[in-house]
Amino acid sequence: MKIEIIRDGKAIAASEQKNETYLVFQEEYQEGDTIALYPESKGFITLQLDAVLGRATLYADGTPFLLPVPFGQKHDCYHESVFKGCKHFLWARNAYEWEYDGYRNLALNPYDAHENSALFPHAKANIETRGESVFAARNAIDGIVASNGHGTWPWSSWGINRDPEAELSLDFGRTVAIDRIIFYTRADFPHDAWWTEGTLSFSDGSEIKAKLEKKDGAQTITFPEKKVTALKLSHLIKADDPSPFPALIQLEAYGREC
Image (cartoon, rainbow, N blue to C red; front, top):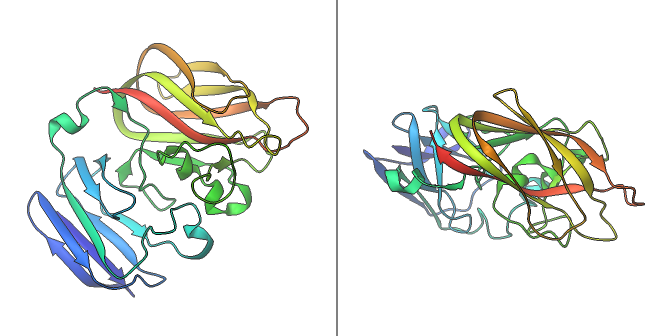
């Protein structure tokens, strides 16, 4: 297991140990810096790459995870203290089986980003409002469910730029068994609108029409267990409301490892 801070193409700090490693980086990050995590193999990793973002147990496909340190508007979807300051603690280890072998939210990854192709789950969308980080797909799986506002953290959301063709895809990176989806739609009324329906398409070829309502809080749908590697949310139908701004705060997918 290895963690590096890469600047101008070179590792300026690194730590490598078998099974578990940590790095204390005693500098301010500079624009262009990248956090790199090199897992030992495919499998589950428990990590903490920022003190504020906290720990997460994620599935690694065995390739390097590269996270560009966000600056400017790319930082707006994070708490103001994330990746800030002159002391940073980064840590990772191979996960214990009991950390992932149970019923849990399989759609949680506070470390997701556009550039992520190595740590799962991973969210992506065909449309994000103005390309701004506060409306990026990653916000729908970051674990933050504040929905009574809009804009910067903690109200960052997946924004669809008023486009009815918007789609959000969630890749689990392996086969999982799920039977419950929980939606949190943005509820900054009257600024916001809401959806009355969305279609969930699963990698097994099945579809579910999810009925939604005007609500500040969880909206749950349950179904017989499906073994899937991915899902997609699409065909979002906006309510007949003057506001043109529906948005998704969080999508949670509950189940178990196969």
